[in-house]
Image (cartoon, rainbow, N blue to C red; front, side):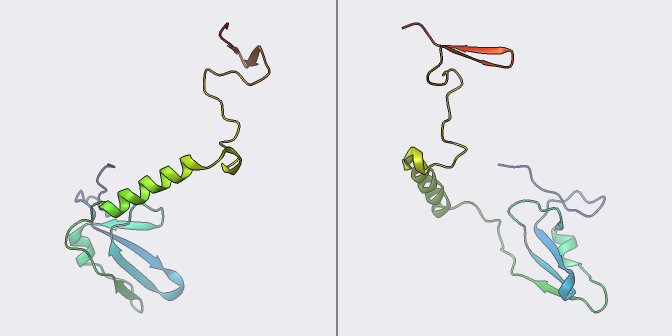
Length: 128
């Protein structure tokens, strides 16, 4: 579990409960539940600062429904993760992404070589 995010307002050490995003093209500020992860152009706010939010004259505030309790990972989230891992493990080697094809274990020398030199290290096969 990651560290608890704090309010973005200076000198405020309260935990963040909401995320503020500006839509400059529409002159709108969107205040909603705390985002899953911190984004560079969003602001995390504590309950006090979220409640007292004001915007410039002519701007609109769109307040999204806030959950009464923080959302915890549910069984659907865990099942989806388990299914994704299972599906990725079941792919044949030719269907795997290029970055994973031809991957060797740290102690396995590439096929067809007695020893391979990489920089200042040498990989040697174990004698049979």
